[in-house]
Length: 304
Image (cartoon, rainbow, N blue to C red; front, side, top):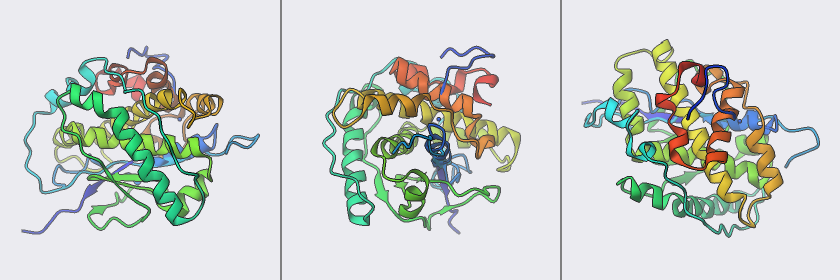
């Protein structure tokens, strides 16, 4: 999920089967759905702007938000349906993620996330360079407060995590309550939020804000745009999980369960149906290239 900055004063999916994908196996992916929705403070706002035997509830993320007040410098059509990141079938680099043990302490969680972000940076480096996008490492925060971002009034559910203008927020208590300490779940959550970072760097977020125009946050047009953003981030997360499953840092069986689990039933108006969350996540995981994540050209049925 992403949030938008506070204004300063002065694949081929059929209509019946959009491509399958998201937080528990069944709960964790419900949470990861909310997480990926996590604080739906949208980059769509104005451009200024442990698996138990019983699968856990999936995490949810908020909609990413973009800093407000920045000049509009792009043409929406050129950055959504025809973005250089998704115009070609680019693949993540092979990476070895050497991560510290994940515990519930603030210090260890922050260290774990920072090291994981370094791994994500390396994985996405070839894609971003190949697309001509300038790379930048996102900041990581365990704080639920983001003074520069505002929450959308229609958001009733607390997300698990959210992205706001260059910072991935993973509030410690929210994350632990939603997904415990299962490392693969944390990595998928983080990969989703990093997907919003990729959208930020490639100007997909700003283009969606420009296309939104002055539509209200709960306007059907706005919600359609947000769903395409969130489902694309879910697909990007699936791509990273495919790489993770190839390394010692990821348990391939656990990763498979996470990827193929239905998505969250929360915030479906902004994150898409549980089936579509899973379909897009699985599309990224199975096809493992950015071309599979073009939600902007997908039929409406694939992004409901």
